[in-house]
Length: 315
Image 1: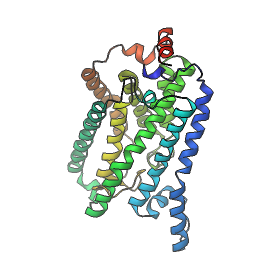
Image 2: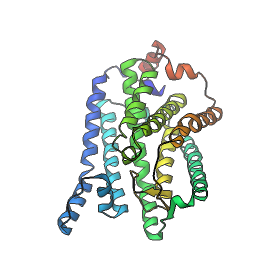
Image 3: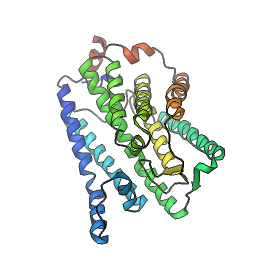
Image 4: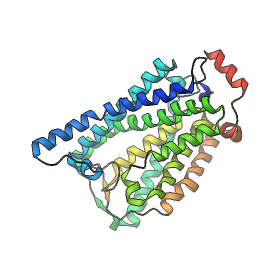
């Protein structure tokens, strides 16, 4: 069982606290190239070093900024591997899935269904409210963006999934010996870590409903499907397709996308609808395709002795 694969005989919760610090340290090291690039530009141009998010995102070429930002996630992913492999003595599979190996079919199905939904809703939004958009497409910058995005954005989203739905989900399960506490805690932490996003500053803390709701949705996917595959695919599609299709002056990633949203953002039904309507529909679709049963036990149940026995056989 995926959530209990961190239940090793010599594993304790304090290791997850220390491991989290190590992962954060790797992430901070990954920011060094971005800081160096900004410093070189500042010294060479005589302009002040950017301190605000909008100034930082527009200081360098958008594609270069995106690449340098995403390097920090690549570094963090390396940190996760080091911590999992050498500190917890787990295999990479054990923090990825409860299946014998990663199921790429699940990853691609989840990616495809959310990519299609994002494309369709973006097209509808554009034709319904054309005054809210301008064409931002430039062939060469877009091609460079696509290359960077296809390689680096799945690394960014996978890093977040391995941290929250993989590493911390198993760590909180070890602490609480149940399933609801890891689900709630990882969702809250995932949402609160988006507080610094410019979207929150622009639209207010109400948008945290969407971020926490998304974390809850991804956590449910992980627990019900016994692995990260569906959450990995969904998260990659959400960020990659979004970065390629639409940008804005207030989004966390400002890219050479096809469209630019010039409307004044507001947090209304567009924050609530995904959480209360769209995500439940997706859960229904996944549950039918993968024959999910035992929702209450898998999402809220205690981790019983039988689970520990299974883990002891694996060790």
